[in-house]
Image (cartoon, rainbow, N blue to C red):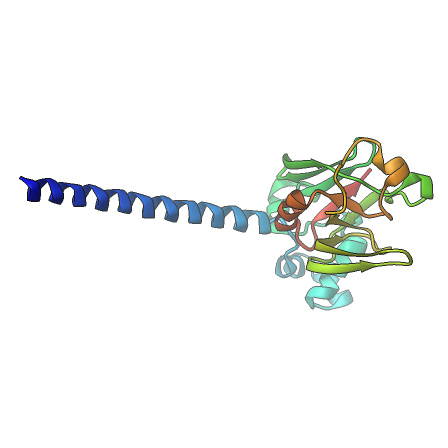
Length: 214
């Protein structure tokens, strides 16, 4: 009787183990799928070269040349940065929205807001407001010192989008975000994000992702 009971317990444990392994596997592939989907929203140099041979004739086919063309000209000419955008029918279907008045940053994917956070933009009292306009992420750096005349700050996630050096990044030296902080105690022009949220934006926003600042 004891042997029979013990055998049944072992079978039950084995079944639980199989279910646990399957659950982990499913979770892994779901995360992998999300990662691939998010990365598909960025700039695709092979697609861009294939779609726009006139650009290749003008600047060449290197990734850096194509990215620079897209950032400086393609966005304003209404060119698509990847096949997903072309299918959607709009070049601004996936982008980062920086709303200065409401002090929020939102990632819009395929026309749907999927991530939003309060932020701190450039200090208005020091005439360092974050410049408005349509830009694109041109750098994607994990860990960097941001250095200027009066600052030397380490950030874990750096996503520059203007030629003047403004970018999205984490700001672990801040305890609060949003509200009217930017009017008297804002940044030097960058868009400061809560560290944990900056990590998520870093996964979503790739080189070439449009940034709309308004």
